[in-house]
Image 1 (cartoon, helix red, strand yellow):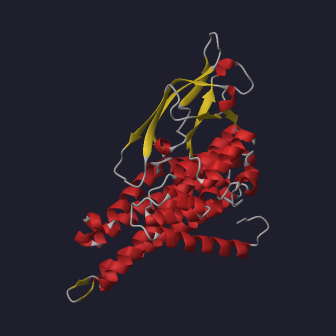
Image 2 (image 1 turned 90 degrees about the vertical axis):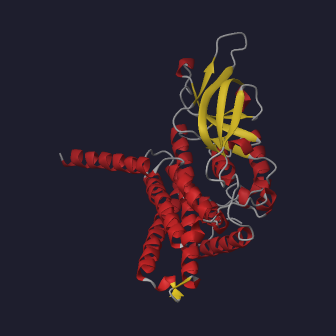
Image 3 (image 1 turned 120 degrees about the vertical axis):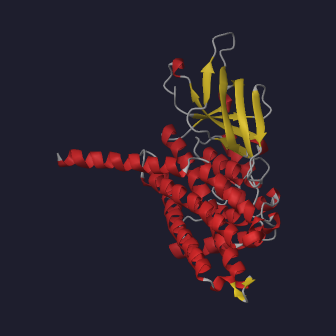
Length: 386
């Protein structure tokens, strides 16, 4: 599959076909089930954005977003966020080379599971310790990292020490490590959401050779910002799938559940609640669609800082993730006692939505980011008027 040269209508048809296949494949397992990773690789989902010459589909983030939404709809337990979204995204953001290309090709077939460690801020630092070998050492610690414990290769986002005095000092790089490297500790962190696998990564003087340090292409700081935007929009897509699944399940249940001799869907209070859920899903869908389009087209805008893609990502993440928690909560209430039973699966969606809301920036943090952007824009306008 390739999206290059295709018309808008052809792309829409490709994505709908991809959605139908994904829904059929994931629909065969229940909520919180783990689909076979090899099967996902065979379906081509792991290499959607990888170039065709490296066994990928040469597609865009828009196609990846379709898969992510369906994974959310099924509440599937996979390392797709850490490996395919962040891992592949980080590799594509680095400068091309034989080692990088080989890792991308192995990721597309599922032979390798490269997971990107993208913590908030500069959690990992590279420093050259004076001594006989003068080698770089990695130090740092970050908790709650998606899928780090499932990685065959860790891609740690790190910042070289400014004390080195080189031109590349303080510019973020990717440090390619084996999870079993001496001094590196990866500890699984259980959370209430059983569909996500998080881990804590600690580096205590891990030796890093030059070949393990991969430079990011273009502006490294903007590349990191774009990588975090990918994560934010991915969680928004996943939350949209969660909300859609909960709305569909609630409407279906309200049609068949009888109370006082008639379906509960005929009661005004239930109708209003379902209508509110529908509105939230519709708004989230529009914001997520805009963010996906902006991010898929953001490659040409890497030279800018806080561009439209970043703003669209913040809007989608802040609204869609909060809305999914609200919709899943209403679904649990409208299912009555059944909704609180583990067998219903509603609990899995509510826990997933709650974790999605907090990963890679809370709604409050993203709204603050938007407010800062608009304040800066207003300040520039005032200066032009003066």
